[in-house]
Image (tube, rainbow, N blue to C red):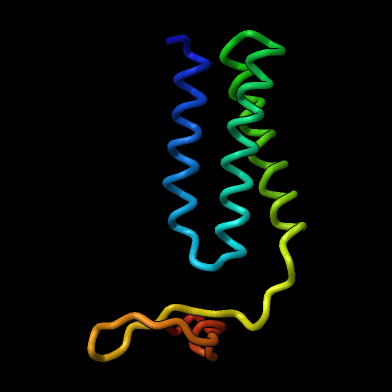
Length: 105
């Protein structure tokens, strides 16, 4: 496989792994947009420049553009939702309280 194919595979794998780290649907949408933009940018950069530098530049530009488009096109969210751990160890989702905004969580 060529370096471009390995780069594209690595970008897709990294984007997929990082998309799972997002907490809210809005963050997940932005991370997915960045991953798809990076993959498309890497492929386009390789097709145009035919070298590693062009592939990496295309991946970076695509990630930024993909994240920006996904973030701006997301529907408006309701109140911020946070994940909390109950005393019994179960995890639940509820509206964020003041601890979240003050950093005391």
